[in-house]
Image (cartoon, rainbow, N blue to C red):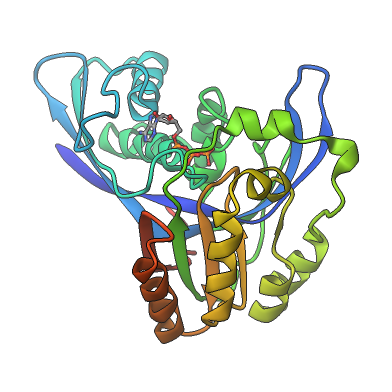
Length: 291
Ligand code: ATP
C-alpha cells in the first residue's frame, strides 16, 4: 500500500461534568462523548525522500510541529522506527478551536493511518496509549462512537451506540480559550451538574428523548455569561424542533439533536438567516467503529 485516505470525525459532548481538581491543577471530568459525521479529510502518502511533510488547506494553520497531525506522525515515526518519508494532506472541515476536538481527531487519524500504511499490526489500545501522550481527547478519537470519558478524559468506557439522530452544529463567530473557561470555573459554585447516569440509561434503552432531556455541560455556566449568543443559538435550535441542545466541550460550538432531517434543516436555515453562527452544519451521529 502506497497511500491511505481517512476521515477524521468531530465529537460532541452529550454531558460534561467537572468532578474534582487534581493536585497538579488538571480538572477531573466525567463526559459522555459521541462521534458525529462532520470530518476533516486526511491523505497519508509514502514518499521517497525521508522526513515528515504536512500540507493543509487552511492558510493560517501551522504545518510544522505545532500541528497535532504532525506531532502524531513524529511520535509514530520515532516510536516504531519508520524510516520512509511521509506526506500528510489535511483538508480541514471541522471548525478550529470550537470544542469539537478537530485537532485531536486529526492526530487520531494519523495514528490509525500509519498503523495500516506500514503494516505495524498495533492494537487500538497501543495507539490509544501512545495518543494520550499528545492529548487527553486523542484516545477517545481513536476509539470513536459512544463512550464515557473519565479522569482527564483519557479513561474510557465504551457505551452501547446511541440511537441514530440528526445533529445541527453551529459555531458562533467568537473564540473561547479552553484554559480560560476551566480557570474561571469555581467548583464550589457549580449549581447544576448533568445527570450522567440518566443519559447512560437513555443510551442503554435507546431512548433519544431521555438522552436529549438530560444533556448538560457545567462549562456553560462560564461561557454563556460571557457570550449570551450561545444561549440564543440553543434556544433557536429547540424552537425549531431540537429535542435538546448543548454547548460542546469548552465551546463555543452548540449542537441540537433532531429526530428528523427536515427540522434540522429548518433550524440551520433560521440560524443562517439571522447570522447567529459562522459555521453551521447539518449532520448525523456516527457509530460504526473504526478498525
Ligand atoms: P477540544 O474540543 O479538544 O478542546 P477544539 O475543537 O476546541 O478541541 P482544536 O480544533 O483541536 O480545538 O484546536 C485547538 C488548537 O490546536 C488551535 O489553536 C490550533 O491552532 C491547534 N491545532 C494544532 N493542530 C491542529 C489541527 N490539526 N487542527 C486544528 N487545530 C490544530
